[in-house]
Amino acid sequence: MIFQLGVGQVRILESKNAFLIIKIESIKSLDIEPFAQKKDEIKKNIKDAVMNKALKEFDEEKQELLEKDEITWNKNGVDQVLKWSKKDNFYDGKYKSIIKDELDDGNNFTIMTFTGGKVDLKEFYRLLENVLILPNTTNVKKQDIKNFIVEAVRTDLIVKKAKKLNLDENVLSIHT
Image 1 (cartoon, rainbow, N blue to C red):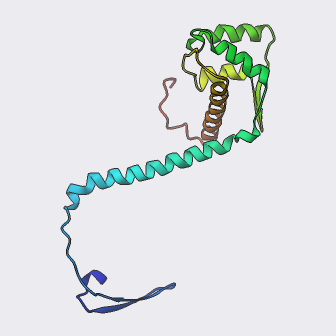
Image 2 (cartoon, helix red, strand yellow):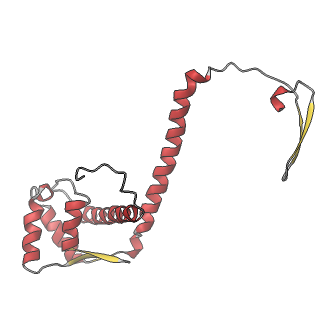
Image 3 (cartoon, rainbow, N blue to C red):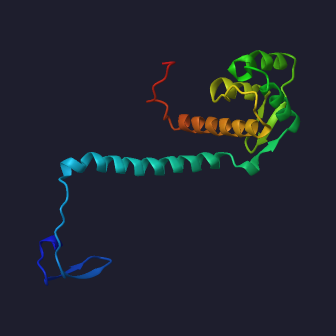
């Protein structure tokens, strides 16, 4: 209705929450490209805006699943994993035999505890096998190990949460 008014015309609009008096002071024409030519660019801009917001919200939710102040580290456990991590090809598959030998010897030490759970050697092995893998490096530091474990646990918690919501039903998998 407003776009059909001419210069100097007035309209009054009323709604439940507002009373508007609109007077057209001037009308300027703009040269714009036809919608058909801008459609793909508009779609891309909307997709980018939504994607960035979704990724930010996902990251925030993931961070909230495991807060850093909920974590207690077992220094000896972290030091042992760090020692193994410095071995050539440890994360390229060598970890399997090293950790299995430790577990077979009854050495299932705790690496980290947090509200609602813990990461012992057996869980660390499962995280490496099924969740995340550290890049094969001999320059790994203690903080890299800690960051990896936290990220792996967060990722695992997200996956479990998604499965509880049956969000995995429509996901393609190499196992199905």
